[in-house]
Image (cartoon, rainbow, N blue to C red; front, top):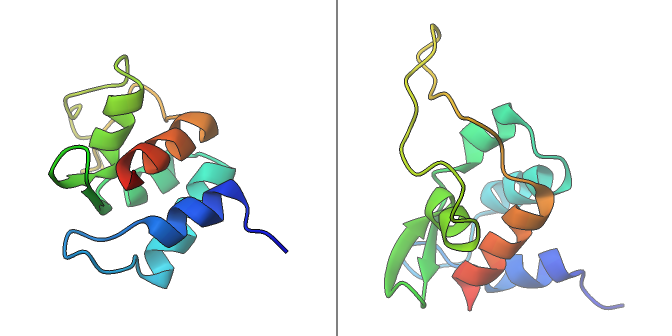
Length: 104
């Protein structure tokens, strides 16, 4: 049985210390790619990925910027709960492409 494309990319993904992602990080990425929501984006956007193309570790948000230059580049103001506001949440396709971009 072969891996799905997302599972393959998650198997390649590494942390800033070049270690495999934790099970929690992989689960969060699986969840947001499957069904992007604001709450999941707020939990996942700071996942740090080793990125050969950038030559340094980057966070998921920056990988999204790399594949979607129209995505928000600056953090929005904080809401009443103290959480960063976002103009939009990246789509499943953009998130999958961002992980793929960061892993190769």
